[in-house]
Length: 350
Image (cartoon, rainbow, N blue to C red; front, top):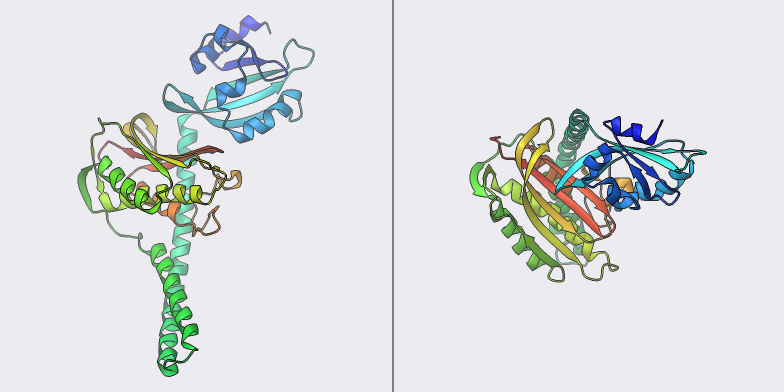
């Protein structure tokens, strides 16, 4: 097939040399990446696709050399300030002027909707199981605490009171954990109209007081309209996400100048859990920490899943639940040095 024939395809095609540089691009690639083929020529393909995608960055050299046969990989492409989901296939070429061919195509909306719906269904099933378990735990936990109190009363002021106090304190801690698992179920939203920046400012104030060593930057879009929702739950959702990021930063001594940004933007043509919306609010929490471990990318929102030694694994799960109750979703992109969690809320009535 002649190189010029690739201009007839609707799929973006890039020809690569052995170092992963673009030697030729077709017309669809010019449109997808927003650059002429002359501008694309000589560019590292990773700089086009996003060098922060660790999985692709690690496997691309082997893919070009033919180790994988055909490498297929999905990623998010930053395009004119918007995130575009694309699927790429790297095909090694033999006895050709190019080392490999890369094909890139936008992932159809229904595929992303299916993924969002699958995540929602998984979280719903897991939360229901955990809440059933939590109810079973709560009653004997109360009995343990009551027995420890009675025993403490019998011991008087002796040294053994220290042990009963430990039992009571740990029972209270576990009861608090159980309450957090149970509380969101079935409770209705207390809706009011407010500006999302009121939530952001409250979170900024709390972070500044709790984490004074972290630079907290505000990057707000002043044109953001008011939303209708549950102020307390959206505040808790954003606080959970931001506090989780701040805690990761404080536990990462290798980060020389820890920084966290609260950013708001209007998003267009956004995919939510089960539908697409024309306009939405995007509230981002961006940090320069070590990133979410690759092994946790597919389950970071699952209850009791955490990458932190001192974490409970409930903060992000509850944030996702509260945002989904508003018809939205929480997404994230992460690589070392840059992690962004996005709360996406529809501007249509929900």
